[in-house]
Image (cartoon, rainbow, N blue to C red; front, side, top):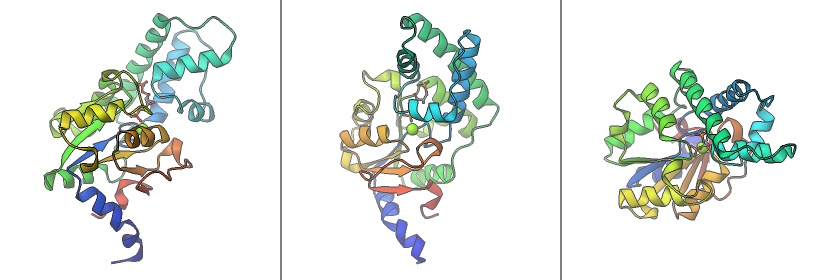
Length: 237
Ligand code: XBP
Ligand code: MG
């Protein structure tokens, strides 16, 4: 076996012996955050706000999970006006989500390298698949119906989104709910993530984590993860 393959052999073993693979969505299945960022800016312009989140600002704001929470945090940081009402935030998020779906539906957000192959290999091994994400069911549908076809959900035994739980990542809620729906113990699963918040969330649920570095989190400290890969194509074919 080549030296680089040996370097990932343990990651392969962790993946292959899991009863279930639990996938994060944004940044893990696909590099969606750049489209989210553009969708936020579209919503701000449509709402008459002169906010424009460039990649530097957005990278910092990604420490806040949840689009609505992210906008509220940004506005609070401006400290220049009364806080946006919940109705304003909800209206902005509806515009943003609709535009995000349009961007995804143009096919501009393919699955990351190795994702399709791992999904197929896991199914072939009889492993179960699940999703544990902060984003909404609508955003998951837009992305995966485009990438996997309209029947994409049939491949997953549990799909838990941000609005299904009280507390978003880094709280463990979304992973605990996924384990409950799978009726599996944390040690029998592997979480595949791309962010520090996702790593903390899955770790608090007791689930071993494999990180794939994504566009906005390329330089994060993932020392608490079991393994860190560039992307899933580094796993054995
Ligand atoms: C990433 C998030 C989401 C997205 C934006 O979720 O934190 O908030 O950035 O989507 P994950 P929404 O990595 O857990 O998939 O605007 O729908 O929140
Ligand atoms: Mg993510």
